[in-house]
Length: 244
Image (cartoon, rainbow, N blue to C red):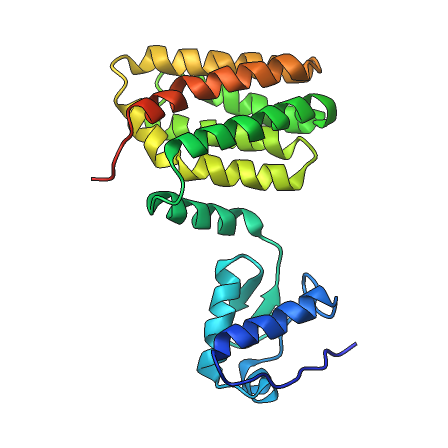
């Protein structure tokens, strides 16, 4: 059924456009996959300029609920999507960089989220999810692996387990928190005097975590992941880094 668009007031125009679109989403008039009318049609219906409409659409794209494709054709235009991971990660990274949250805050958030994730994964993870996690562990175990690749695979391992927990919100928050501290963890790993030994020790934890999840031992997995996180991440709290 066509959406019945209405004009919005002119003060703080782009925010009012956002509110109008949000109201359509809340009412169920706009759903994932729906396309907005072209700018040339939607702007006059809302009673706003096309520049104000574009500003509102850029905000929606930034927060991960809209994708705008320029040009003409069936894929052109703005489409409602569901992509919270990148948006929340970007937002959290910025606020962390601005000092809204301390390293201690991030550490405690990681502990709470990942204890929950690993405990739930022991109950709900599908074999395919754990097979993928095992591949990541195997790749982290390569004798010549460098720090950046290890850090990337490490992030993916923790996020993969969170996604296998059956709780989409926990997965998204775990990804956002882990991504926000990725640069600091990278620098901490690069500063390790014996990188091969550090990589082997960290990955031994990963292998043990995966074994406990496969065995359905969520309580021990939760305890181990807390120890694992507090090990390296805890040193960052004790010796905070600043951006150069």
